[in-house]
Structures are given as C-alpha cells and as structure tokens.
Figure 1: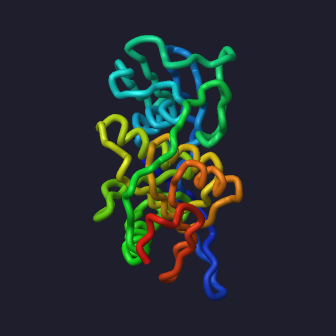
Figure 2: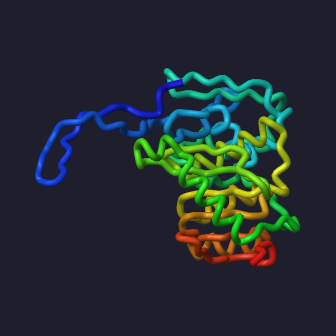
Figure 3: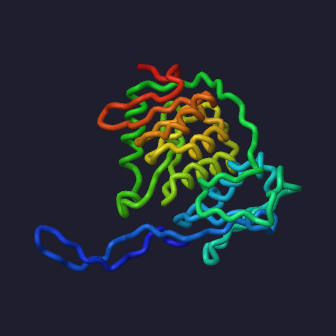
Length: 255
C-alpha cells in the first residue's frame, strides 16, 4: 500500500516571516476497477483500503449482491488497479463497452438495484449523536495531518466500530460499504457518521446499505432530503457546537 501522503516543499508565512517547510499533502490518484477483466470505473482516491473501496463501489451500483458473489479481489497499488472476479455472471452488465467515472459518486445508468423502505426502529439520543460527531472529528489522524480528507464512520448505538478517510466523501461511504460487505455485517441497525455534505449520491449509497440513521457535520442538498425521506432514513445534520438539525424521519431521535 502506498503512503496516503506526500511531503511537498512549501513557503510558510507566519507573523511577517517566511520559511521553507515540508508539508504533508494527501495523495490523489486515479485507481481503475476491473470487474471480470472489464474496466468499469476509474476513481480518484487516496489509494488506501482498495479492496473495500472496490467491493463497496460495485455493491453500490448493484453489480454484486452478496460476499459469495466474489471469487477474488486482487489489488495492485503500483499500477493503481483492482481486479474483481465473480463466481458467476454479475447481477447485471454495463450497457456500454465500459464505464469511466472520475468519482465513485457518479451515477451509472442500468446498474441500479431496487431498494425498499427502511423501517428499522433503531434510535439514537441527541447527546449520543453529538458525542459521535465529536469523536469522529477528533479521531482522524490523516485529516489532522493534511486537512485534505473527508471521514466517515460506521457505528452501532453504543460506539464507533470503524472509520475511513479519503479525498472523496463518496469513497469513504463505499469503503464502509465494502467493509460491511466483506465482513458479513448486518447494517439494518447501524449508523453512519460523516464529515462532508450529504448529496443525492451519498443518500442513495446509504440507502443501498440499508442503514437507518446518518449523522453529518455538514448539511444536505434538497434532493438528498427528498431521497432520505422516501427511503425512511433519519438524517441528523449540521452537528456543530452541541446543536444539530433533523432533516428527515425524526422519529428515531430521542430528544
């Protein structure tokens, strides 16, 4: 695995003085994902947790549905490539000779998987939602070092289970999706805690995972709110300074 940062020589200005320093800058590189020897995506990412990223991305577009759909996942960080081979035919095939996307947030027509209403009765207290956000913001060493990443975490009602950082907020959700997929984790009672804006693509990815509650440091778009309301997902957003706003399905929040 390549290091997620590079040291760049920069001029540093402070209080009227200029000095030269080596600044850690987060890595960005295009990683190609191949499904059964066909390139289906090129994702701009930091180049870490590539197995999870590939599995989560393919899951999010409906190309794979269960862990036993995958025969092998092979990563080649030096070539910025991930190869996924399935045990049989993929659940659906791309309509063109290949897809090319610069971000895992891009929508892909023809690979969408039906998603049902999320009815989970999982709930969270207002205090716990605020505590989760404070813990997330203080627990990302890559962001503290570079100030150039987004971070998302998977939690249950008691604790944060795992977190992932990347230059793309969509990638962090796919990494968590890949983590739960490869480890056989049921998401029906889980929570996503994240730093970045909640777009329609983020809303759809979380819906695909079947997660009932999302907590964000930032705010949603109007399209995302509509999707989350239709999906039955609770969104607690703009969690800052001990305050937050509930944008959808308030019933799961204990005030």
